[in-house]
Length: 183
Image (cartoon, rainbow, N blue to C red; front, side, top):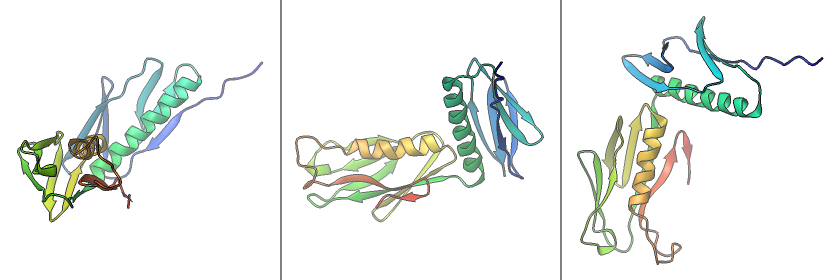
């Protein structure tokens, strides 16, 4: 007879970070900042005990192990987000035509991209703070996914087609993301 091993993930919550769980919505708060996310999977149970978040499966399979590891990554990202925040940097590169990049409301506006008359737009996601200094756009926020999606929106807005990408390298390019330099 083979006994099933207990697969319980314990995620330690650091000092100064409060955590609460209400109806599958996990909320972390620290220094007046708060970040919430719904984490639900039918065969998993999430509990908070003694300053730890416990994730336990009701049945043991590869799928549950994958979901547990995904939830662990989300929780660790949320903890780092409320403590330090996330920062991405996007570089403005133009060699053929001088681009004008500005922020209007919740949009990053790129004017005169390859001499186009219609400006290109990238949406700034909720909870993300954008700032332009010289030829660098700095994006900061607590939610890693929102900050990363905003950086992706910048790259996508200046995507070019029908040109050689080795020669025409104008656009907005991510150069620093989540603690890693890409260049």
